[in-house]
Length: 372
Image 1 (cartoon, rainbow, N blue to C red):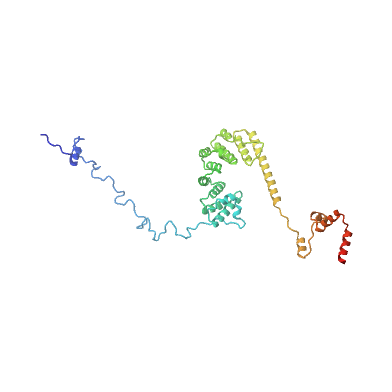
Image 2 (image 1 turned 180 degrees about the vertical axis):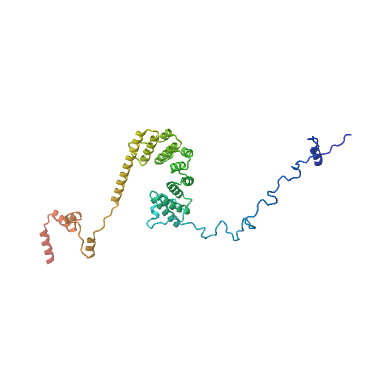
């Protein structure tokens, strides 16, 4: 009778696996899996003898002191001087929140009233100083950012003032934040030019190509074309830089707000290509367009002043009125005034005249009526 087969135990499995083929004349079960290297030497000896790899710093002081110890923590307590932020540059008294345009003020409605007014004043001051003192304008923009860093118009202002001061890296960062917060591409041309400023013309072209130009306002589309042309020049692609400026808005016979910059950019590319005469013609067109637009702006300002001009009252007229005497007015014909507003007696006389009744008879009748 065959011997009954029993299930193999775990010990049987281990003995079976250990009794396999031999390597170098010894079975695997007899060989230690990891022999010590170089005799009895340990694989990793301590560095520098028995010295501990990381000695305590400054004697026995612990590297990280407790929060309640003598060492100050990284986060200052509430209300401390370290926590207080700088107030920013001083604001003149004549600058008010209303000096900021309505669209920008609407973006500040999520702030408290006091904070919104202070931020609006800093933004208005930045707009006032951007041309004459861009560094101080940037300080006002940073002051607004410390109080309202999540408002799109604030980050946009910081980017514009940073670009004006030549801090193109900060301008790139702030413009990206502005696009992420607002979802708008209003400053795409400035972002492309800022990428050029940090020495990345390839990146500038990628940013410009990623935008749908048909969805941009006309002036933004023209500014983007100028910035893209500049990036092409940075790469030494003068021919393609000229192609970037071949847009429908390039009209040499008409002057728009974007015309001077567009004409001047074309002149620069033509000069780079060695077409000096054409470059001079486009530069002359840029100057003419600038003069025409300046004259139009001056006329517009004059018209606005004439419309709101108010004439003060004469001091002599005020004095006469104060003495109780009737002030002298322009001479107006009394008869004309009666014609405009006839009295009741005039209407009665006219009716009697039409009825054929004479005025003396009427007077006599009155006398007889009085005698009775």
